[in-house]
Length: 373
Image (cartoon, rainbow, N blue to C red; front, side, top):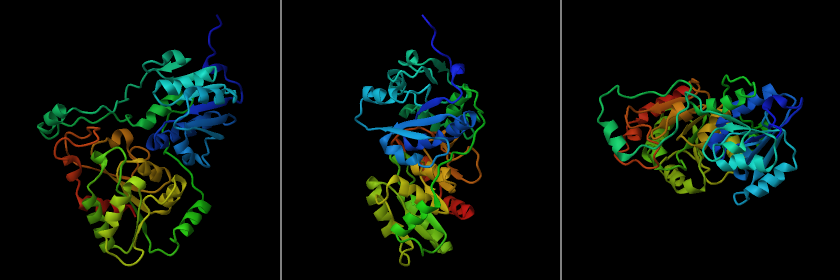
């Protein structure tokens, strides 16, 4: 039997499919790897396969020639059939799931690169082992949390310097000879898009600076800095400087955003609640429009950072060393953490007293926002 083709057998101008990730924040963290892939193969046709909900993220992206999307209820066989007609030379699978490897296998793509993971290695022609610095985001048990909070100060063990998720995607590209050095995550919105969205929502004559507030987080309450702290921080900043607050969020955040708006007495148009009123592309343009975003660790945090907007982020149940905004260590962004030894726990809800978030002071957030302006 003839051995499967290796990555080194690529044509001069290959057609490359990248199977993208399924979540917004993860998608943004793949952009450094996509840029390095484009750098390695400047003449390639590079297509990204992504869920339909993430289509708008990829508009005007310099690494891509094409975006192919699939619906939530579309079968793996239907996706594979559509991909087969595209006649790709190489598939790079960024997610770890069996399905993400099965799609290009069904499409008959002859070279398939991804990490070795349970139930799918036979679907790949080149399997990479996990990096030594890779860390799995494993939820802590209640017993583990109770043990940790009783440890002495200084007990905390920090993750390796290269633990951030962007290095995981870059490592896959390095198997193709791409440069593994990190780049800042990058997304693109055009000046015309920013102009259009400011006109749509009547933002042309607002008092500057324009500051964003993103108090929600889909994953669960453990990722959310308490709403009263958001209110207190926004009120104090508004007291210190003349500014305008734009409140962001999805439809599920509408009640939270309405409550925050009602607690921020101000002159007309100094606080505008836009939660549930924007599509993804409009949200990106508005985040670009803001001078700073005060936010939880969630998708819009990654969007803003990749669009060049400084973010101020309280981290509690999650780890900035693994999934923080922008390029790790970038001084443009402000990561706020308490000294809670149980953090990160990666749980949706805190099983004890929520000390990781409660111990991040309003004053710390206020000073960070003012410093970032």
